[in-house]
Amino acid sequence: MRLDRYLVGACPDVSRSGLQQLIQTGSILVNQQPIRKSTLLKNGDKIQVNWPDNDTPVTPDPNIKLSVIYEDSDVLVIDKPADLVVHPGAGNATGTLVNGLLHYDYACFSLMLDPDSRPGIVHRLDKNTTGAMVIAKNEDARGYLIEAFKNGRVEKNYLALVDGVPPQERGVIQSRIGRHHANRKKMAVVAAPAGKDALTTYRMVESSGTQSLLQVEIQTGRTHQIRVHLAHIGYPVMGDSKYGRSRRAIEVPKRQMLHAWKLSFPPRSGGVTRTFTAPVPKDFAETAARIGIGLEECLNRPLDSP
Image (cartoon, rainbow, N blue to C red; front, side, top):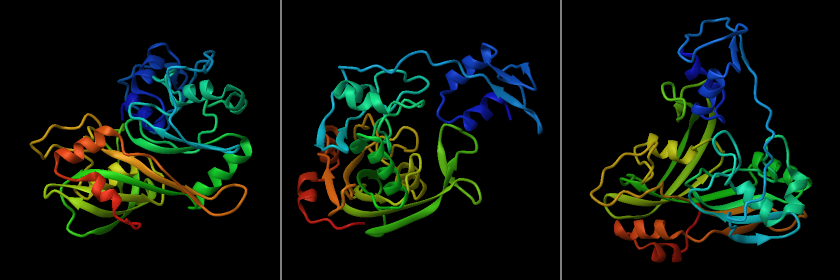
């Protein structure tokens, strides 16, 4: 395998361009020697990555406006908009949700800055997925939420507009998800022992005959899980440029039509599990209307879990 392709898979949080820049500047060595990106690796090669010091501080950004659903001393629940990366990384040093959190409450979140620049972050939504996210406001709450996610005590309920109509009203998708064998920027359903277990359940809420509105829950939190699973069974999320395909004569949405609709978790102080709902964004509702699905009528009906 070429060095650059190998590194994309080995360093999934770093952009391809960022890795290529490290190669060009001699910051990546193979067997202690500078190397070209097209160099083919062989078994036994030793790769050394000399990461540059990150001297650029993570700063507050007043242009990132947070839509707050709920807040107390432990957590902040927000409605994340489309086109917003959650935390800084290669290629996204500024303009992220984390920069917005520092502007919203610098005294709180600056105390939680870690080497990864992810203060309070306990889960993520893709850049162009909208909806409810919970953020910890102190280290005790962060540890509690991480354990709650790990132990399945957090319920994540999504709405998805998909191409096609599933033959059954309800379905379960269980597989392993890992890096795509040919495109390391994509995830895919893979055979054991590769990848990690992933479980997705869905319920069809409404259909136009060619597209459908699904209510989706995930019991695991793998990268791009819903998008990968729905594409794998033949019903990709509308507007998904990475995993979808065009099968319709209507205007293609500019982003994937996936919305984190409801988020439920028990409070750290104990008591009843609370559910927080993120309003459906305008572009999602407009896309539903274009394909003939009355979103407001659907969501006003009692919906049980998938």
